[in-house]
Image 1 (cartoon, rainbow, N blue to C red):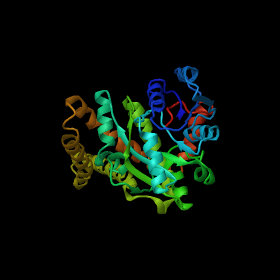
Image 2 (image 1 turned 135 degrees about the horizontal axis):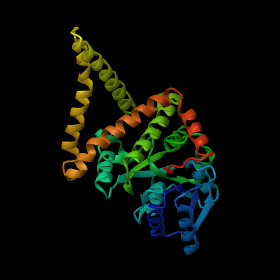
Image 3 (image 1 turned 60 degrees about the horizontal axis):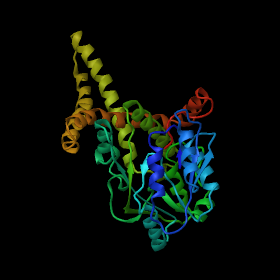
Image 4 (image 1 turned 180 degrees about the vertical axis):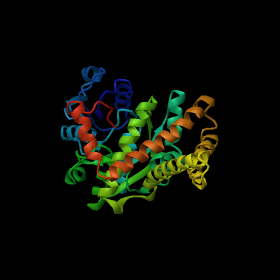
Length: 343
């Protein structure tokens, strides 16, 4: 488990690991980045309370660096990748290992079941689990068991994981997808099963959500540029929408100026794109979030565009080869480490 500035959620995540009903031995390796919110002190406390928990330093602070540090420091033949915002059901490890033995897969994973506790978080969770939010992939909405391009988190055989080089530390987001791509290219199988369902706690604020999806979109654009033949068309929907709405607003504004000065104002048709998108968001709110209460519905009206636009803008910048430059600039401003939460 890589952790950085996550004192709010890490205890629940670790507790869920210690409650696993897996019959064999296991250890918990936590790679902690340079946190400033008390995370370091909390994980040290957890380690003192249970000898199975090991705390490791992750001076770089990034997710892939922390994962590689933790994997290298452990010894068992199965590696379970965990997120600090995730809560595993007690049978997770047992079912994953049984599935791995039954299928021969090199990596097994399941569903990211987003669950919020506040109206805002419930709106984010609803967007995660809907086709209009994150595209309706099996790792978000479920589906039939079988081979997959990628899965949520992942339970790996150590041998194949080490042979393909583990996580690429140059990729700050989307590293799971990129690693699974290498596993499949090496002849391994990535296996999805809906039996593995992990509770995930969404971002608690609008700013945190916007930063998360901008960064995710940025690196998805970078990965799409690097590996163009390995990408699904759904990745292009948010950037196409952002470009379309942006051009529509610009053209519509020019049309307004034309109308004011008395010139022909056919460019007012540019407003069709943003109006259609607005109607889509309203319709999605009425259909998808109708059972969540008025406060969550109102937040959904804001959350959905936030996810789409932040992801889409990030994708465009990443596709233009700016992901590494933006990450380097952020590291320079923070003294070489990221101060955001590790995913």
